[in-house]
Image 1 (cartoon, one colour):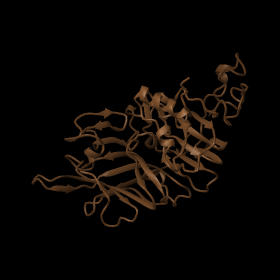
Image 2: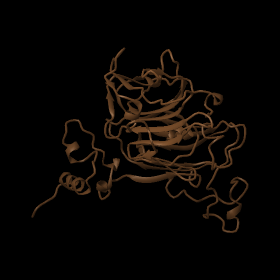
Image 3: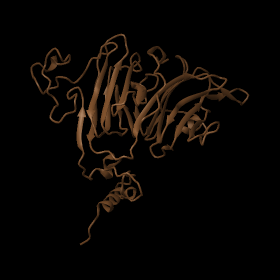
Image 4: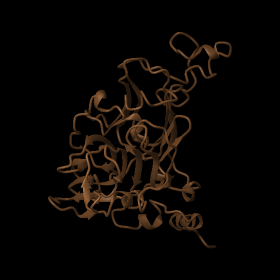
Length: 390
């Protein structure tokens, strides 16, 4: 009788689903490859059974413990529990939180090993006075400094604190204020996520669901990192640093930019440059223009949101500066590095005489990457007054 091996079965599933499968049989066969069936990159892997255990942390189960959800009892400890007073325990007693001014809440604190698979967060219905005032920090394996340090909205590809729908593979933003990400985030010993409200008032609502699994983590996997930077470029050297100071081996997997034009005309002639493993003056990878890097051409004539690239916000002149929200996920083409990495983008437009014009524009960015720990120290996180959107 014909016997189908697990490897042949995975190959068959991959072919049937027409989806790339990381950790498929062909990957297992490579010397030193990482077998990671829990990565679940597509429909083809869904029938493959593993020993992973599904968990979720939320206000209704803050520890993510087995059988520990929906245990809150209506009362003063749960500010949104009045609606459940007549129903009692088990009936949506603690679905939301109200972070006080300056308060930092730990929204995930679990022992490893495991992998975060999905994060959903919602706050107040408008972010225009609070999106960048809320800060997310992720800590892996009891590290002292965070591997992720970002304003809430920018992390989820919301630029300039203006809502715009995002329909990509790893980040999805839905009306009215629903933030989702699907970046896989493995941890070995511990995972902790904090949410800080830096407003001078109480945030009226915070709710979240963080889906993760408890499973063994192979040695070859890197840790997820994200870093926010903002600067007004200078005409003398109009380059914005997306990421710098990275040491060790890893791979760069995404860029989000919230661009505010402070000059008239077109802004997107600048090149994106990746300096890899010892590059100094000249990069190894140099693109051909901003709209080219973000998957467009001949400017951004309209908004678009696709699996890997998007221009989701396009606010024209007439009510303040022109605003743009741009993302590029290097999911199918991560930029690998072995010892160090740096990334920049130029701010260039056109002069009337058909020459490039260096621009002084307001550029805020999030860089996403994986690497082995420990990571190099991040730049000092900007205070709230340096984060307000225009």
